[in-house]
Image (cartoon, rainbow, N blue to C red; front, top):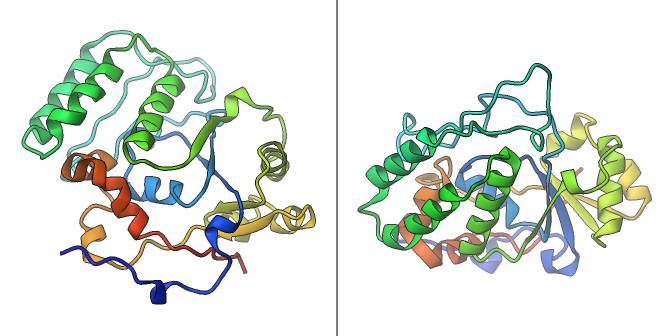
Length: 252
């Protein structure tokens, strides 16, 4: 039985709906449930495809689909020099796409909503897309829609991104009329983004809340979101919403 949070369980703080929150997410291939749960905490997501590509990371390697061994990797073209995620190209051959679809069907064909979502995933794979960033954005935004997340995703590669991290966050918050920025607490504690500089410009700083302690969520937290989606279908996003705190946690 699914146990939802009660209003009395919510910590004190600003109401999430009281301001527009921006967060940044590095593009990831079929990431885990936590990725989308954190995404659901904001209203504006910057998909940071201007960052440098790093092979063998979540950028082109999926979270476990079922067991820890059930992962998929997107083969990419070799470059003589370092490139951004937006510049990276997938190999043009179709063998890997066919292999991915075969694996997904093998693992999930008996899931309750396989017949609904797998054909749509197949259409994305069949699209003539060779840019890694384009493929990841299309797939991620489609999953966002399936989860009914009221979030807008924009790509940093299509924005002005020739500044340091703090200046970029400030610029994007002003550009998209966001009053707050949410990230991992270590983003601020390690100085990757300067909290004080954002506060000086009236941009409040928040940290992603910890995933609620729940045996139900723990079963899916580190698996690819596809597992959760194919199990619960259109209700998947509403389940995530029930576990989301209505209040914001400011960074100390």
